[in-house]
Length: 354
Image 1: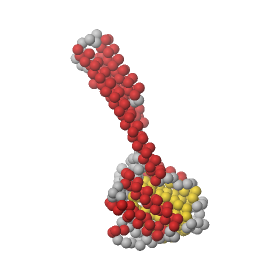
Image 2 (image 1 turned 90 degrees about the vertical axis):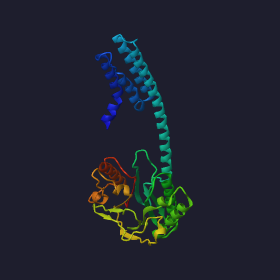
Image 3 (image 1 turned 45 degrees about the horizontal axis):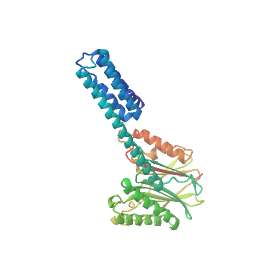
Image 4 (image 1 turned 180 degrees about the vertical axis):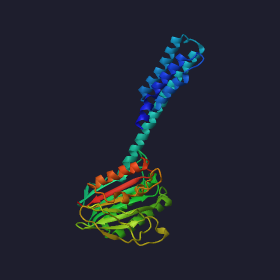
C-alpha cells in the first residue's frame, strides 16, 4: 500500500516528463497532450491546492518550452495543445478545491458521528467496583463510528453489572436503540434485584420505543444481549443471555471456559413472538481470571477462505497481562485474520478480578 501511495504521488511528474520526451522524440504530427493534461488531473485529488497549481503550471511551461525548442510554438496545433493543457489545469484546480471542501464536510460529519457515539457509548473507567475494566469498539469502516454494538458497566448495590449487546441495523436508528438500551440498563441496574428483572426492563423499553418512534423500525428494534453480575467481594459471575454470543472466562493458568447459556431466551424486543423466561446461570470467577464479552463482529469475522475467527479456540491456553492487553491482541489478530476488511462492527469488553 505504501508503494502504491508513493507511486501515485510521483505520477503527475512522471506524466509531465513522459509528455516532454514524447513531444521531442516523435514527429510533429504526434502530440503528448494527453500526458500533459493527465498530470494535473491526477494531482487534483491527491495534492494540496498549491501542489495542483504547480503541477498545472509545470505542464503548461514544459509544453510551451518544447514547442519553442522545436520551432513550432506558433502553429495552430501547438497553440491548441497549449490552450487545452492550460484549460485542463484550471479545471484540475477547481476539482481540487471541490474535493478539499467535500473532505472537510466529511471530516466534520465524522467528528459529529464520533461525538454522538461517545456520548451514547462512553469509555468505562479502568477500575469499577474493584475490577479492572477495558472496552474497545472497532468499526467495520474506517472513520465510521455509528453502529448498533454496545457495552455498559455499572457499579450497583448488588455488585458490578455489565451489558454487551448488538442492535440490528445501522445509522441513527441503531444509535437511538442503543441509547434506549443503555439508558434503561443503567437505571435498572441500580433498582432491580436480579439480572432477570433487568432483562425484563430492557425488553419493555425497546418494545415501547419501537412502537413510539418511526425512526426505529420494528425490524431493527431488537437486540441480542448478555447481562452479567459480579457481586462485591464474591468469586462468582451470574449471566443471562438474550441470543448473544457467550462470554469467555480466561483463568490465570490459561484454561478457558465458554459461558454458554443452556436455555437462552429470545433477543430483546422480540417478546411479541412468545415468552421465554430468563434463567440466570452462575459460574466461579476466581481472582486473576478475566471475562471477555464480545459481539458477533468478532466471532463472525472471516478470512479470505471464508473461515470464521473462533475466539475460544484462539485464546485457549494463552495468558494475558490484563484486559487492555487482551483486547489489543484480539483487535490485531482479527485485522490479520480478515486482511483488514471487517464486515461488521465489533464491540469488546474485558473484566479481571485483580
